Image (cartoon, rainbow, N blue to C red; front, side, top):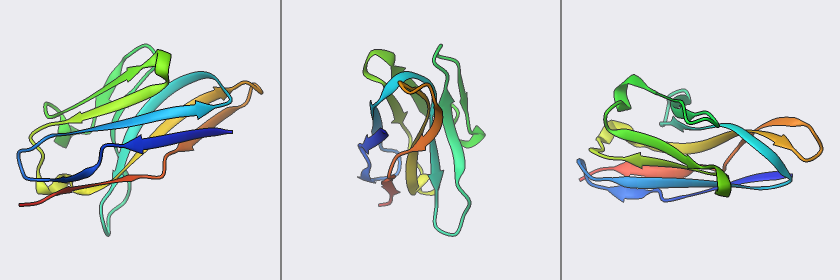
Length: 120
């Protein structure tokens, strides 16, 4: 019904940058909040950054000043610019979106995840 497709993960050295993208497609009427979560091995999934349809943002304390979330409403796409990456940022990053479908249902949907590895 609605799919989220992520891209942009990979291996980067400490201090480097990556940009994640997540595009929503399918039977979409309107996309409300979008966000990025991450899950490291042996740890719980945590919210990294979130952005509302109007552009209000919030961030995990440990990424403030280093990560920036943005979105293109016309493309139903959310981005996560990650700078000054640290080894502790290593995780699988998941995109999340809250969507009103054309069938007038409200769903909370997830992408398949993209691996980010920060290592020298």
